Length: 259
Ligand code: 3PY
Ligand code: MG
Image (cartoon, rainbow, N blue to C red; front, side):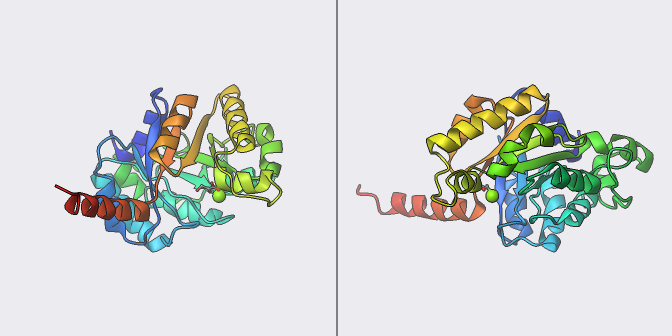
C-alpha cells in the first residue's frame, strides 16, 4: 500500500493512529523520526513550527521512504498552502482555527476536487507517490486526502455540529491549549483542566455521532494514552525538539548515574 493510501486506511482500522509532531525546518529530522516503528504518520507543523513550505515538501518523500504518510498542519487561513502540500504528496491536512461553516468550506475548497470542493489540478508528486495513474488518482483523491478541521475556540465548539456537517470535512482535530485559552476567556492555559476535558469529550462524541473521525494533540505519551482510551482516532505526540532534548537528557542521566 502506498504511503498516500496509508492514513485513510489506518483511520478506518479501528485502532488509534499516533502521529509524530515535527516543527524543526530540517526534512531529515521528519524522515528519521518516520522510521520509528509504531507511529503511523508524521505531522509537519507549518503553523507554530519553524518548518516552511519548502522544507515540508522535501520532508514528504523522506517520510514516504519510511512507508509513512505525512499530515501537515497549515498556518491559519492559508488554504493555498494546503493545496500545494497535497500536490506534494501529503496524505491529509490539519487546518487550525476552523471557527465557522465559512472557514470549513474555504478549507474544503482547497483540498477536495469538484464537485465536493474546488481543488485545482497539479498533483506532481502525489500521483507518483500514490502508485496510481492520473485518472485513478483523480477518482480516489477526495477519499484519500483526509481533512482535519481544528476545533480550538469557544466559537468553534458552539458550531461543531455545523462544521462536521460540511461535506468534505472528514475529521475534527482538537487543540487543547487554544481551547483552554478560549474557554477561560483568556484566563489560563489549562489543556488538562476539567472544562477543557469536558469539551474534549463533547467534540469526540459529536464527531462520532456525525460518522467522522477525531484527532487531538498530546504533549506527553501519558496524555496520548488517555486520549487513545477515550476513543480518539488520531493522536499527535510531540514535538521533535522535545524528543531531541529528552533523548540527550536521558543519555546523560544514564552516563552520570551512580554505579
Ligand atoms: C492547541 O492545543 O491549541 C494546538 O494547536 C495543538 O498543537
Ligand atoms: Mg492551537
